[in-house]
Length: 106
Image (cartoon, rainbow, N blue to C red):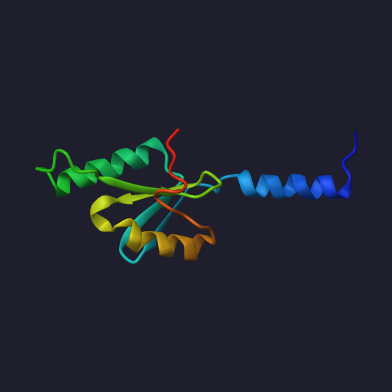
């Protein structure tokens, strides 16, 4: 069955809406942000945090946010709060992110 023009357009739109972006590391000021991190990124941030705060055994060392396409951004918790980082992610990436709305853990 051949796609009609409308079906093809909808298919492309669906793919663009639901296809996550590739992994990327960028900076917002001095804060390192990692889009769609891999396991090694989580370990690296955790290791850096423990070296910087060796006595903090209960604190969260990573903050993260998501968008509706399933993209995830992480940064070291001590480098900035969501309210400081999320607006800059939105501006750079051209998407809406929110620590609460889109962060339903799998």
